Image (cartoon, rainbow, N blue to C red; front, side):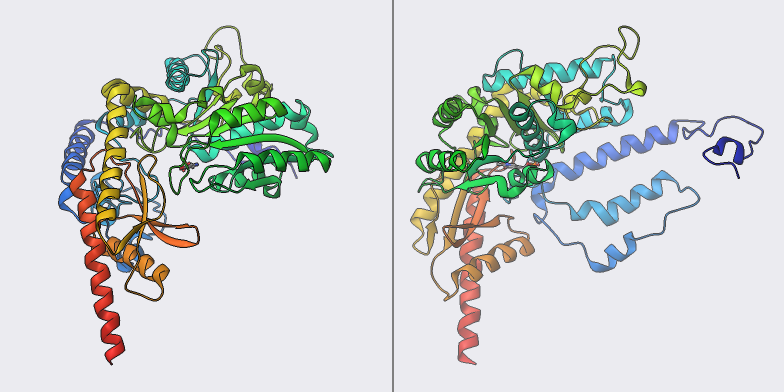
Length: 499
Ligand SMILES: *Cc1c(COP(=O)(O)O)cnc(C)c1O
């Protein structure tokens, strides 16, 4: 029996025409495309009139689960299913009263770029074409935004989770030499340091890099949720005494739960003195560099050996668009570049123009993320995005003032940037359960969509002002909603007691 020779086992057939998917006549595709754009702009521009979120009914979830179609269907019919089954049940990112987690609102320049990207369909793994040049420009802009050197290399990725992962791999290569890529960790016991308030993707990156999440020392934070420097230096010394190799200090510029910014200059000093890689997770906080008022809070970010941040959060680029920057181009390339016969870089032709994005990160085939970043930054300018940053921070301060003026509400963390953590502090024996219920009630009622977190052991209602459509009245609607729902829950629990 022939093996590994499938060309001979499947007989050929006479060839007639192409199996092409393009229509004979583009008119109906063109008309549908125009209609989709009109419908979606209507949908976006009327977001405020809708509930912030509605749950997808079970019946529609079941209806969505269709078998894979053997024959084709008209795109018009599929689009109708999108409008009926998918569009009403969004994640709420388009809505001005989306205040949960860390989610950007997208923007007109960004969504128009996505339209171009889909039709243009270039693969940004590498080769000699304009999209690669544009990504290099966007990386240079990013480095300039945060004050990193001109030679800084970088790559656009799905998000900061991947960007932090790439940074961990470059730091690993810096600590152990290029042979770590082939030989693995061998006997090395690497240890990394981040504040206890660092994002969960940091331990995950260590896990995925084969270093193990136990290698992360989660350094306690102070009352302002910033990493304790004394405990950091103690932990490094203890690990060295124990024979481990401290290799990475992660500063967070904008923690996910409260927006705290670590003392970056001090962390840079400690990392330099200890000869340890200094990485900054600035997932959303780095965007504050575009505001003259808030940029000083980020002092020291320009000293990072590597920086992870997202364009899809505060900078309002549509999902997804993360970015990693690395100060030392050689170390960056040596962490990812490979020489493979079928991917040979040439001196001329389409296979020229090194280094390629695939030499700077884990992906080979990649979408053209640079276009939506470029169009967004050009359309609104650094000043326009800076105004979005300042607006979010101003609304957060307005929210904090309202909380201070309501006797039943309590602020749970200082407001540094655009995140406000508070709770209803009266009216129930179990305040954690009450506040969790209120957040779910707010979401289900479609009033507003904050999220929850835990601050010093207490469940907090967490409002993060990332959406550029949000105004102060939306923050007021949140507070009014919280007070109303707390009162209602109170009334219910009093009835319970009477029964
Ligand atoms: C959002 C966030 C991340 C993760 O970024 P993704 O883009 O969601 O992968 C990491 N760190 C911080 C501080 C974040 O806010």
